[in-house]
Image (cartoon, rainbow, N blue to C red; front, side, top):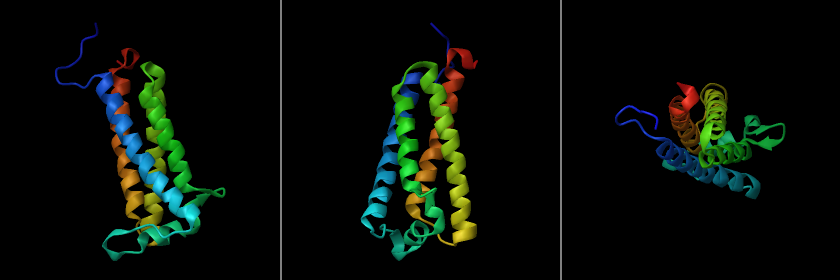
Length: 147
């Protein structure tokens, strides 16, 4: 039996947290994907039109693929990683969370400094992915070979 620091989360807890974050991210990405393909303006709080401005910008697609669809793929990968036990799931989770966090940071930069509008759904997705990154990193650190 491996020793772990008192109060440190075990793999089951980390996998559950990552799974919950992945489901939240899937919901956000699914909503934005649906709004994109239905041609609807995403609901944006506080009477802002930032979500529509961001969603209709030239940065809303990558090689003709909506960024929201990329989010679906990323969160699906994160959910898969959460469901997988062992090192394969831990490393997949770290890879997806790292790439997702970096891509979200880039998109947030574009929103603030290039587009000049902020989508609250996008910020929520970035926050979810940013929360997944330390969970995935701790999961690696807790793995037998991560020490």
